[in-house]
Image (cartoon, rainbow, N blue to C red; front, side):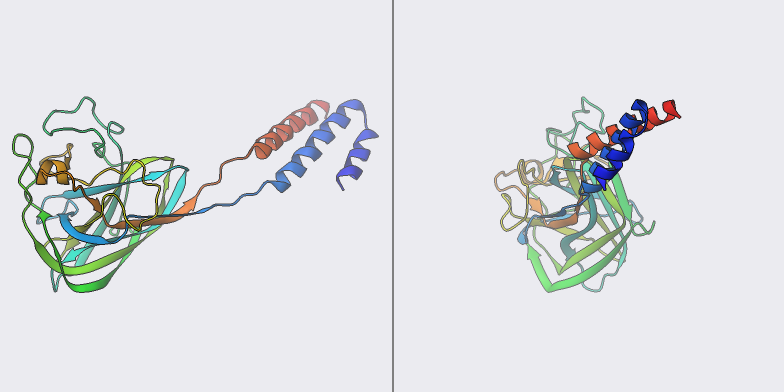
Amino acid sequence: MLGRLLQMAVREDPMKQLTCALLVLATAALGIVPATADPFFFSTGNPNGLMATASRPDLPPGAEIESADDFILTKETKITSATFTGLLPAGASVSQVVVEIYRVFPKDSTNPPDGRVPTRTNSPSDVAFDSRDAAAHTLTFNPLLLNPSFTAANSVLNGIHPLPNVTTGGEGPVTGQEVQFTVNFTSPFDLPADHYFFVPQVQLSSGNFFWLSAANPIVGGTGPFTPDLQEWIRNSALDPDWLRVATDIVGVAPPVFNATFSLTGVTVPEPGSVFLLASGLLALGLMRCRRSG
């Protein structure tokens, strides 16, 4: 078919010969370009029982708390779903779930920072890059009970303070129902290649949701993990600053903490060299066709 079209073009005048040849080559090239998306999966592994950090949206009766752990994208990726695991008090019901995505400081931030915390290096940025929430119908969630009683050795809820009172040692053990949330994004996150923080927030009818820690370095997860940053936290009084859960609040590092979560999605295909060449040929052919018309 391609040879026949080129033969037909040769019978035309020289300008039409070139125009038709460009259009035929461009069409043929575009027809063989693959448009595939690769699956994406990231996981930090299972809870290790060392730390539990509060994380709740900005809704009454409590002030907002944000706990954050990082992940890396090497290609533009659409995140379609996520899981995260934490503790709920027995009998509490879930009224709201929010998921926020932050980039790494100093992006989306005032720089230099205000100096109220030991460092902002490798922290989440001042403001969220994007977010989804159940109230806006941009996500749905399903909590699954994994264990009726799970204890984390330490916790952070109220002990989130600026300098000079950042190091509290944590607030001791906390016990609750171990629950894994599966979150589906009805409007997927479309994220360019970059380094990000994942922030899940859960509002309960009573008590507080605590996000459970995972091992650092990650054991049994799915990467990439380099660099792997530790977990950070802030409340509305500390905003826009953040504290490192282990290094700043507990005051001992190592061990440092990751948090338990996974992300699922697909990478966005990049235009290949054949596609770019074909597009150029097609555009040139159309321009010549207009001139000779």
